[in-house]
Image (cartoon, rainbow, N blue to C red):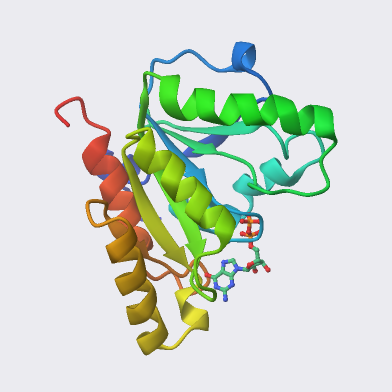
Length: 203
Ligand code: GDP
């Protein structure tokens, strides 16, 4: 078997599920840069996070009962965390948990000292929906550093993608826009690069 050199062994970070935090007291220590992913249910968030982590099903953890309304943290040996913010507008959740969640999400997005960047995922197959606009307004008004990721671009023609880019570019002209397909592995490296470029203390 071919022997790997030391730098090759560590070139692909290894990811693991860290914990699921249903409330503020369960958050892990704020000692590692965090990158959060949000978007409405079915937007393709688990698929994208798995693609970013080179994992086939790690982010499915968030779909287990009990984890759907908690922040799910994934940790890499490169000392970066990805944070799955569960589906916005998830209908099948009891009212009490919804209320808790509505406190937790703004708290995390605005008060977490080690949250470096948030990615808002928008399904490329549709015009931005009302819930997408609500999330965009929140991130803008609270001055959260964020980018928009258009998902499932393999499912739309290039001219529709151009329209989406134009609409979103107008809605948030100062934010980076990404376009990805987890299914075809398109655009994933650009997001990965963005994360690694913002995870060093110099940024
Ligand atoms: P989540 O609910 O946001 O975590 O979304 P999932 O990652 O579970 O994906 C929801 C659905 O969209 C599933 O049926 C996926 O197969 C599909 N999906 C996810 N990513 C893509 C993609 O890049 N292209 C296409 N065409 N479908 C996708």
